[in-house]
Image (cartoon, rainbow, N blue to C red; front, side, top):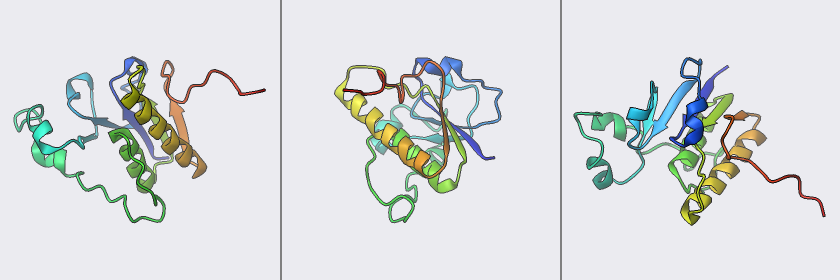
Length: 153
């Protein structure tokens, strides 16, 4: 079974088992918070990246090789709702055929409207993945996909 961990740097990252057999994907300028990773994403504009990621600490060719992730135009993923890098990463993982995807550190745990929209977008992509039969796990301690209880009137 192909297993992937999509990791952010939220509080729940501390619960991730770095010795697990998950392939690890990380993002943005947080390499120092990761014990290991297999693939790194930074989908920000080059001007923003250049001030943070340099040739000395991370080769540009590695950062940019996923700049044009082949998602658009695929029948499997036929819409353009990407409010964050993580939603794009999940869509790419769906295309790559991962059977299990774990989220850790993807907490979006703040009252900021932008982060709320990013979390909602990721949760919709998670539901899409589940609808395709992909096993989704959210690490203990993460508010991702949490609810206050079943709605009953």
